[in-house]
Length: 522
Image 1 (cartoon, helix red, strand yellow):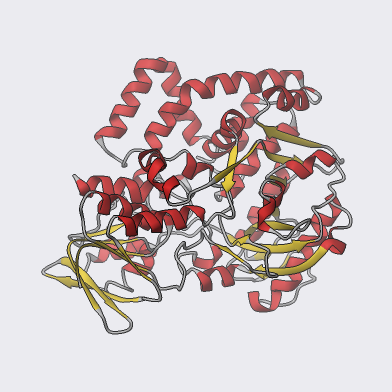
Image 2 (cartoon, rainbow, N blue to C red; image 1 turned 90 degrees about the vertical axis):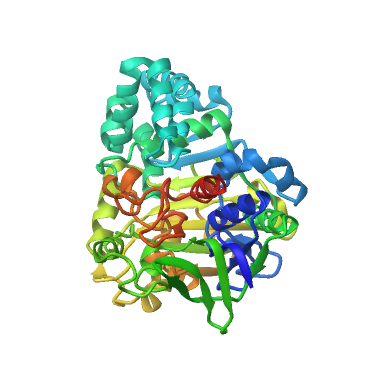
């Protein structure tokens, strides 16, 4: 069982690497410990028959706009890849009963903002115009290995087209906190909260340096391009990539946990599986696995420099996540407006103060009194995910402690997630009920995954960290996952890393897998 490359982990980054290498003539095998590919991107009947829930990722806009998808768009479509546009992208609800929404209709978005502030409506339009100029340069940086001549080229093109002042603004955006960036541009607290919530998706509280970029990209990107979800489920991208891999002659081995990565003469030589099989890699072993699980785990301690191993083990996870999946008789009745039933995402994070509070509480090990909630309504866009007339709700709870030291409200006594899971889910539902009265009467079934459950299902989600490592500045760009090793290589020859723990980080863009494979294929 000899291959040119062996990929450990059938998440979307590992599959992207395998697809590209197999298309370039490499003999590739992907080995996956679970019975199903996809990692955190999978669709399952988690509550009742016929109700198809996205276990983790739901928003596939990053994949749809990725370089990998652009390269293999036709081939993936031939394998059944399907997207559905969500013209009403995201909205925030507020304590006073108001709301703000963003969709592809610019006039509608701006009209909502103008009711709060004429200044902010004009600032939004100005930012959107600026986004259309700066976005190609930002995506050029995010889509290049870090560091590389491509990165330098992207910066040079930005300098040529935007000028010195434009590049300074770009760099300042990348290092600013959400609060500083939003305060500098908008005067209304609701407009600021609307955008700042995106930072909480990726572990950036309002005052964390480097957190402004994601709110900027998501807010302006959704306004300019809209959002897409997977037709029939997020696993449409996984199914299509698996089909394309096999069409290229690649292999996928499921139910095949890796026991160890073979090392000989300082180089990776293959993998040993838990069932006793040994697979040999002639050219590369690619671990689409959290680095701390690779070194000191799959690679025995001492096979890499001690300094490198220590830095990998110190790679800091982001705060935890809870997922709540609901089967519903009908969509929530949002009290702010009936039009909220059309949106893909509803954010319940009404102000920057509560965002700062929840981050601090979770970081201290406390169960937050009022977590940030991302409420996904996929059946508002894709009714096929539930039986006729029925719906599902996808609720991501951000941010939570991996280890519980107490409860901010003093009502939940359990100090472990198995004991606290259902009680905390009830707290979440109470919060949603405050914005959508009658929700509980619509629930036909529910399934809750605590941070501990997420890690049990996918060990890469350490402590329930859905982004596989904090994206704060000391762990991003050239520091992801370890300074000096941001280009996917490791100190062990022929052993490479990809996935959300590597540059450019979390999301469904398949950037690390595709960039690594492109480098190897040369």
